[in-house]
Image 1 (cartoon, rainbow, N blue to C red):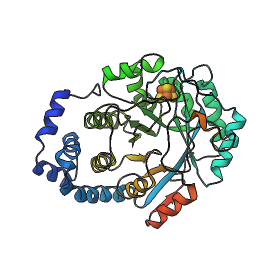
Image 2 (cartoon, protein in one colour):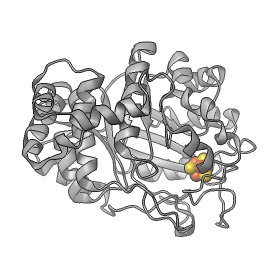
Image 3 (cartoon, rainbow, N blue to C red):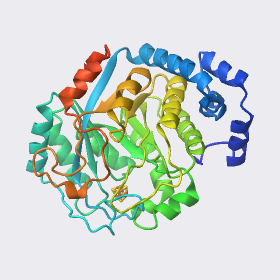
Length: 368
Ligand code: SF4
């Protein structure tokens, strides 16, 4: 469980089992929502068909209130797939004999030019954990080169110290994503047997360090499929409430990545279907209306098109999950996971507009 959560696993399970229809309706109709409203809306009781339309309506209203018709677009840029960790569910892990590649600064710029052609103005830099090659100095150089090309630069790389986050922020990065993978400390140990990522405590306080260093957006998530999702979602909610208090100047951003097939053959023990995923995203939108929410590149076009109307406000377009995948090389051998949406960015924009929503490439201007 998330370390600051004041309830035990048994108490959370017990609450889920005791949720009544009245509790679900009260949580749906309330204006301000707390931790137990989240549990009520995530509960098995709330998963029944009779609540789904009301859940969708409440979530759509919350989304409209804070985000209107805007759907923000970003692109992930994988700059390296070398990694010293041994996460059992990932094809980039050190034991996997895939071709490895770290892009040079010039190659990164080539990739960026290909992304910019589609109008995309928000970039997420992604890399495996490789302290020799993906150093803070290197990332700062990447930030300095790209911050005039994109109005928003985000990071999804190895967790850093607060001091290093300050340097990265000064270099142009303002947003951070770090998946906790699982909040279950025992399972975490099993899934991350070696490498720097094996230290649960270092990872779980990543957003806190980044928030204190000035990052404007703090992304949190767990990997859906590793552990029972309702228990993990309770921890995710507690994590969000904690960060909203401790880092009140930053915005919290949720993601709900489901495990997709990898060539290493990892089979998730607790698969999450689309119905569960939708319930979770609707519940989080209702309880955290002001927070950002990204729909994962791993989902199908039909799911994307519907969830950006009812809950999510942020999505990627034309994603490649291979270093060099946009322009440098089309090496498909080393993707981190499989994608379910092969649409070109323009097709995605068209689908968004067809649903009477607005494609947004840039949603703020720096005062400096
Ligand atoms: S999940 Fe991240 S840290 Fe773990 S092996 Fe894959 S790239 Fe490395």
